[in-house]
Image (cartoon, rainbow, N blue to C red; front, top):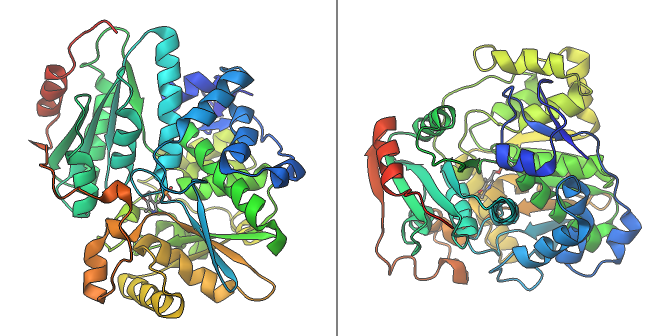
Amino acid sequence: MLFHSTRGNDSGKDFATVLMQGLADDGGLFMPDHWPQVDLEEIKSKTSFIDVAKCIVPLFTASSFSYAETIKIVEDTWHDFEHSDLVGIQTFDDVSILELFHGPTAAFKDFGLQLAAAFFNEVLESENKTAIVLGATSGDTGPAAIDACKGYKRIKSFIMLPNGNMSEVQRRQMSVIDADNVFALRINGTFDDCQDLVKHAFRQRDFLNPDQYLLAVNSINWTRIVGQICYYFYAFNRLHSKGDLNFSVPTGNFGNVFACYSAHQMGLPINKISVAVNNNDILHRFFSENDYSKQTVQETISPSMDISVASNFERLVYDFFLDRDASECAKLFNQFPVQAIKLDEDVWKRKNELFSSSKVNDEHTQKLIQETYAAHDYVLDPHTAIAMDEALKKSNENMHYIVLSTAHPAKFPKVYEELDINIPSTPKALMGLYDQTEKLHTFDAQYDQIVNFINQNNPEVNV
Ligand SMILES: *Cc1c(COP(=O)(O)O)cnc(C)c1O
């Protein structure tokens, strides 16, 4: 299985190349040349998350890794999870919560990033090279990327975070790491400023040592999606007796929803995918009004979903709406965001087969947290609460909904102080964050300052 770009001018790439490259040469996103099909009876027979993942990951890696190599990575990769089977499930009436926050950074991003980092390292080992990971984060990507890469000596991570709306827990997760190959860079600016700096760095590449890779950890990296596809099949393994699946997914960059859609294309019997967003509603405007247009970011109490555009959405447009017409896709996305995207009416209406969407503001998010707490003595994190809205409205005797719980509530303590709710337990992963000193390097949003810092901390060494 090889991969190609959604914009038609980069194709025939193997898994390792796509992994290390991130974005396609033509600015598009990589897609598998076809959707591998999964044997559902086999999935049903598995008894653990890892065993389910072993049926999924090799389907995408075969062009670069032997089956045995991939299986070994799947067995060894996911680490420091507090739940013995990695994913927890809670069921209340007609709603189940798929708890994806039991990893070392208490958010679902550990699933994708730990897998990507393990494959990064595998490629670096085999080519005897080193890499710089450069990323921008507004919340949970940074901690998960740092944690996933910190054990690999061949990788140095520089993660930029804005001086803005991010919980103190999220910030400390990046600033108290005790590892000499990890750097948290606080930028006097917004998340968009951080992203612009990263984009500029990827064009310039003027700080890299000879033969050094520059790696992206943003949610368009295909391997992250692969790691996330696994838990949709795991949900089927555990909950298939409840009939066809309906998922409600809190989303920002559309990575997690695209993983859900991928699982559907691979044969998972999914009835509906609910796309749940906060006030940053570009996706909701698309699904409800056929208007995909960029607006300024609003700060909310679900900061990991505060985005102005949803990068992975291009993959859905290409695969689902345009039947893989790359030239049509390139036309739309080469002009975006200057020109908003509006599909032909009959093409857009296809969404009704599989998707619905909802938008939940902060006040209603708080209400959903309170109601769930009162009814079930269960504390939803603010992102999860947003996905709860559709699930509660749509679930009934004939329709079971699975809500993806993307973070542990203890990452957002301020939200619960205001609601006067005690978070019942703090995951091990978040304990002690306040006892350690923060190591933050602060910079203005200026490329030269960042490059200087990277150069100082990136001596050429033999590994
Ligand atoms: C990143 C994140 C999201 C959004 O995920 P996407 O894949 O970008 O849609 C939702 N909730 C939490 C807690 C996150 O960290």
